[in-house]
Amino acid sequence: MNEPEGLRFRRLNRPQIITDETHEPQYKNTSTYSGKVFRVTLLTLVAFLLFPLLVVIFLLESPIQPEVFSLNEPPLMTGCYEPNLKLRQAERLFEERLIGPESLANIGDVLYTGTADGKIVKIEGRNIHVLATIGKPPCGSREYEHTCGRPLGIRVGPNGTLFVADAYLGLFEVNPVTGEVKSLLSTGKMVGGRRLGFVNDLDVTQDGKKLYFTDSSSRWQRRDFMHLIMEATADGRVLEYDIETKEVTVMMENLRFPNGIQLFPDEEVHVSGLNKGGMDTFIDNLPGFPDNIRRSSSGGYWVAMSAVRPNPGFSMLDFLSQRPWLKKLIFKLFSQDTLLKFVPRYSLVVELQDGGTCVRSFHDPHGMVAAYVSEAHEYNGYLYLGSFRSPYLCKLDLSKV
Image (tube, rainbow, N blue to C red; front, side, top):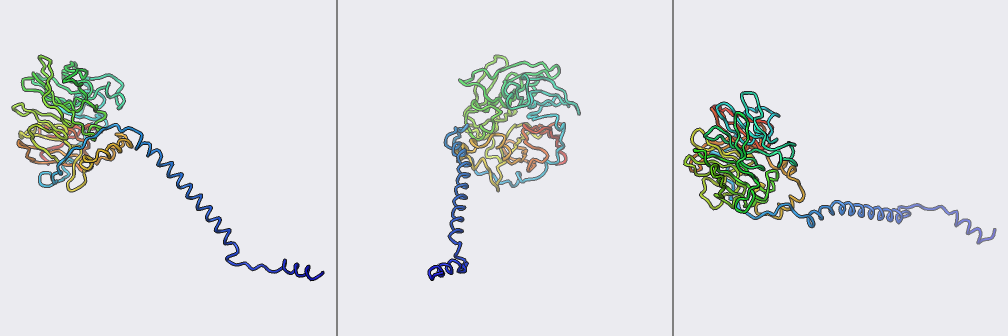
């Protein structure tokens, strides 16, 4: 072996010294590659999630075209409006047997109400009888509500018959004994250049010759009531129907969701809603969103509310009233049924005297017993609580609250 070969041999077999730096370039390259893969994956995932959202925001039309409108700061819930649990003393009746008994009337001890499946029912003691059906089946779903019918306001006339306002089908007279149904006014009739879109509540004069009723919107039907609330469209009206001449007259217009209606003893009109605007005000800036109005035995008025504007607290509707762009976005992203789940349940019934003075109030925070209240009907020492959504009727003993 010559010297070059010996040197070469020793050089090849020289022990290799391993240090921390030996494989550092390899680890560094692997880490860089893994980081790139992670970032690309993350960006792809974000883009995948954001793309549909961007499409919704920029390309899809919002179903509502809200207007900016102003609400005064809600009144403090103190004094007469002080929260309590008095509505929780109510007893639930006919649970799962009555769906959405919106409004109530009585002839003696017999109660009458309209339900979400298009029926007028008679309640005698612990028994329920179907008195009449306004529309035609199928019933029980939003899809068919406009043909099934949705009885809302109900009153007893001086002749002992029932007058019923159906949200989709119009005004009816119903015989409380035979169940015979007579159509008085169809929503297909044009009144003041517009169709009746959302017939809501009604009252009848003492001589039984005229009906006053609310048409909550020409644009939105009852099944889209959340659209109407959020859009705050001022296209509601109060109308007069002459039973003898069959003429219809617009009494008030450009109202935001006129809801319940009640005649004064001298037969002037009370209307509840988001904003009455432009007429003499009985009371404004209530701590909640008023539904039906009914007389109390003391000469005052019961007003039912299914949601409140808490003060102190946060009112979503007050917050959104000045932000129409946010309303549009919300209705692009969520359905009405989904939005309803986010509306805090809080039932409130107040008794008002002439001049709009609050006398007393009954509360059920979170609607644990009485939820989605739409009307307070007083009879024989009890307050019967209607609901536009709950599957029961509530009965409150006034002597205990």
